[in-house]
Image 1 (cartoon, each protein chain N blue to C red):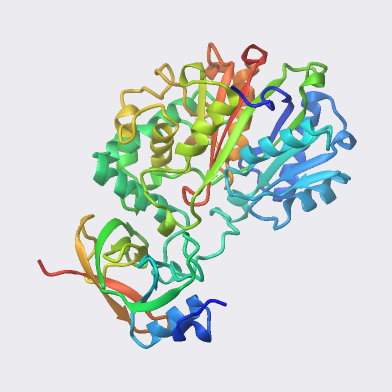
Image 2: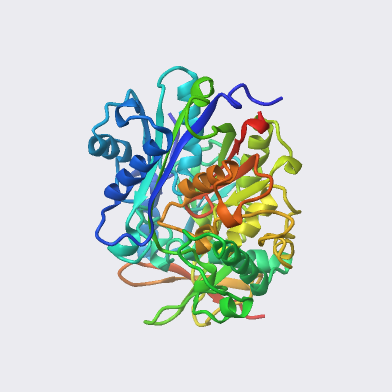
Length: 383
Length: 124
């Protein structure tokens, strides 16, 4: 039994701005431009927006900053910040607020200029007192620790990790908007600078600029817009820890809970899924999430991603925009999972367009493998 | 009203832990009733128990996960060690570049501006 919220709301407008490098622009300026693009995409006016959902790495009170900058007067707003998975949670919260009649036009948005502002990951994440004296590098140390454990328990190799990066690059090479394009081999990834054993810079996501925004309405009016509606089918979160020290088993993320919950909510099975978008901050993420979301058995993720299985033309379409590894990663990538889901379902994905793209799984990750949110989007055929 | 151990009377668990460290002692909390240990120090266990007492950690542990942070200024490892008492903590293994997962290690308190618990490989 799927949840009553399934199919009751839809994304009707989607916009991005400054993907890659946008020198001279602030985070909120890029965010504003992505909102403009989302409005142009659906024909709504700025003043139609009556709900704001926002999170960034540079605004403590993101929905307030967005409201002021855009000159809105929302009657519902939410700045839930759970890192990169914030926007998948916003999809759920916006849909619930719309369906409850608390608002009519919901904006979800994000913006960052971290590449041109400093070239480093921008984070408001506070140090954890019980970890600081060991100088972990946030966030890579945590992901490297998880990788070390996965290799130890399951025989996952650096070559398998590299294959995740290579597959992502092959998708990026089909996406003119992707920031990192060009040939990339397994050997290239292995030869890159070691940052935090066993992860090289080739195992790490990009540091880019970028903003994205989407606009949701109730499904009953979603057909009145220029583009085909992209329906919200369900979303669920799971969170067990904040700092990596407190993660119960470094090889099992809370996606193992959020995934099944979201599948049930959306009334879907794995065979229904045409597109899998997982938050690939590091190569190990893709492996962990494919396992925890049930696309392969626990421990088999490393072997699963080999032989081009998740590359263009492979068995499972994963991160078709090129992912955080090769397309865009402005710090909180979750909004771009939505952007690619919308592009594929609308059949606007150009050379990388999947033949069948009716159901997209979006999996957001926040913190250090901490907050996990799985969401489903679908075309009218998915209803 | 619940009872707390003498060590926690004056300060919260974090400060208490840090004061023990400043004295060169590695202390962890244990629930009197259930015997369950917790780290990092807290006011309450996930089970809801608050009858926590401070006990000397055995110092024995096993490397659960480890990485080496490579920096221009030099490299250092960051490890997660499972204490024999149960809880896991972030730490570093001193005297070696890295150590295989599963290695047995022994804690000591490293003095300094911010005293901290570090581990050394245990003699086989």
